[in-house]
Amino acid sequence: MATLTKISPSRMGPPRFGNRPHGIDTTVRTYQLTPEQLERLRAGEKLDDILKEAKEVEQQKPKVIAYAKYEEVVAERDELKKQLEKEVEHWKELFETAMADKERLHKENLLLENQVQRLKEVNDELTAKNERYFADLMRLEQEVKGLRLYAMQKLHIDVYGA
Image (cartoon, rainbow, N blue to C red; front, side, top):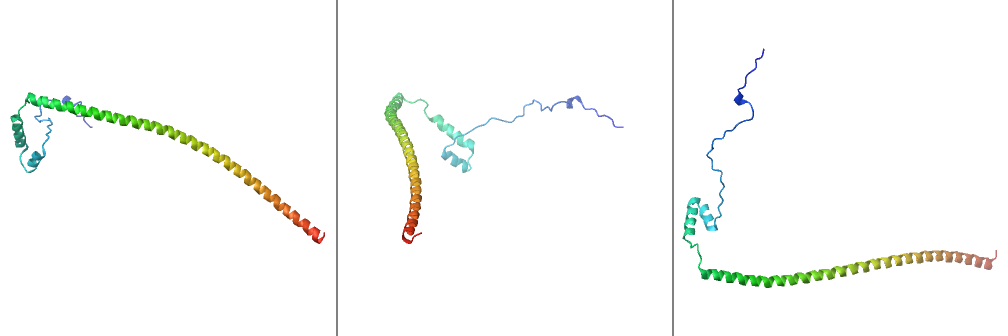
C-alpha cells in the first residue's frame, strides 16, 4: 500500500524569493560624448579618464557671464525677434494670398463643373436628335427603295406590257 508523504508547511503556497539586498547596481547612466571623446574611447582610452578630464575642463569654465555679455545676448535676441516678426508677417501675407487663390480656384472649378454638366446635357440632346434623324433617314431610304421598285415595275409594264 502506498503511503502519503508529508510536505513541510514552508514548502506550501507560492514561491518566496526573500527580501535581502542583492547588491547589484540597477541605475542607468547615459553619456553624451563629443566626436573627439568618442574617437578617444574607440582608441582604447578608459571612459572614466575621458569623463574625468571633461569634468575638469567644465569646472575651469566660468559659470557667471559678464553683464556686458548678457546685454549683448539680449540685444541679439531682440534683433532676432524683430527679424522673425518681419518674416512671420511675410509668411502670413503669403498664406492669405494662397487661401484667396484657393477660394478663387474653387469657385472657378465649380463654374467649370457646371459648364461641363451643361455641355454633357447638350451633347445628350444632340445625340438623341442625331439618332432620330438617322432613324428618319433609314425610313425614308426604305420608302425610296420601295418607290424605285414600284417605278421600275410600272415602267416595265408600260414598256413591255403586262
